[in-house]
Image (cartoon, rainbow, N blue to C red; front, top):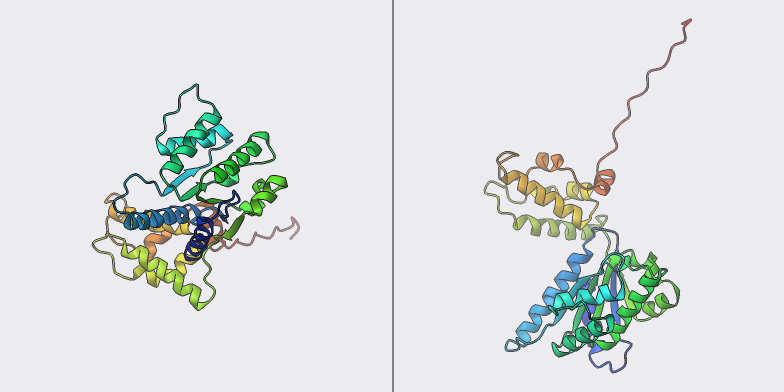
Length: 288
């Protein structure tokens, strides 16, 4: 998140004086449940709070916009998501161009500087609707004086960056991979332990022994493979189980309780050691 945040700040400085249409953007890519959406939301929150501190008397501004690409999106569906976020009423008779004009006008009026778009891997530019929606995103990026940040699953391998449209997008956007956290070196293990410690300190369990999760950081990495979504799932479900009298009620998390929590299929397949197969009994011939 620090690396992505630094890249974003540089791009926003670069775009601040950009008079042409080819503003630079950022793509956050990676496997599922590695924290891409969380990263986008945290960047948006940080930037908006900074803007509020910088302009405490300006209540007529909207520094950040966030939306997700709808499945099987069309250009009108995409721009309607912008309108829905902004609270623009969409009449049934309004066409795509009218909605686009209303969205762009309001975003310029509100001085929006950061536009976050999630799930861009759903755009298949090999289809007509996907290609037209990709063109719509490019059009919005040219009309709105803001820095655009896209996020999606393995975007570099998706149809979004293929063909002439993809080449144009690849020429304007920087891509950063957001992968599972490794735990091979001491520095990486320290980062992982710090993350686990931060999550543990957020717990409100009356009988939980402090630093229990930090002591089991290696076990948590083995169970989750360093994936943020799986780690969050494991700790949150364990905490809820510890709080619920019918399930556990101890109000503390132990390694035994963690071992009872079933995670997503990916984590279960990769995190648990394979079961030993019992040798098959040898068959005996009738004459033996």
